[in-house]
Length: 216
Image 1 (cartoon, rainbow, N blue to C red):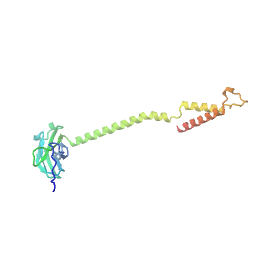
Image 2 (tube, rainbow, N blue to C red):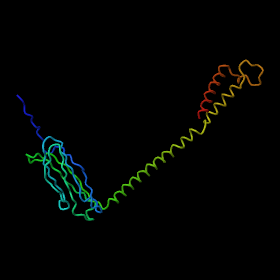
Image 3 (cartoon, rainbow, N blue to C red):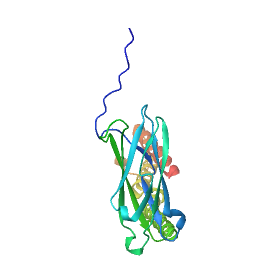
Image 4 (tube, rainbow, N blue to C red):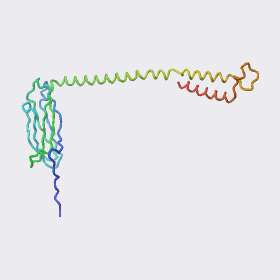
């Protein structure tokens, strides 16, 4: 006995709505932008009906504000700005796209789209370019500042061996020049005579100091 497939019960308001774009920008000096198109996608296995609402319906004309979209299909919704005036520049309006099953009235999902009227596309592009220029200048200043901070360290590191290293090297050389214990014919006082082991240590230390000086 075959079991009939039951469609899962849909919760009101939780159905994702897929629409593109999610922002409409109209430019007063460009009449081609006074007409915008919203595309509603239906990726589901059941048909949807839709309704377009607006916070300021007197400013816009929506072609086919209500309609239906078949399963796994899409539909275009044309929106025209019909009241272009300077007092509306920068004002953000909102459209709400509600969808529901064709057999029901409750809204299964909704999506808000914002709409803005700007004076000029060229001015907007110039503002973007100026903003990008400021960002690049700021980054260049940051890099220059970091390089300036690092330069004293580099100079210190590459300015040659420290005074302590040079002093230790001189001490080791002097120690190697002193007479060894057991040498009787020497004008140097006896307490300055060094053993063989002491001279070996001085020679070893001098070798290390020489390597450090050559690396710097």
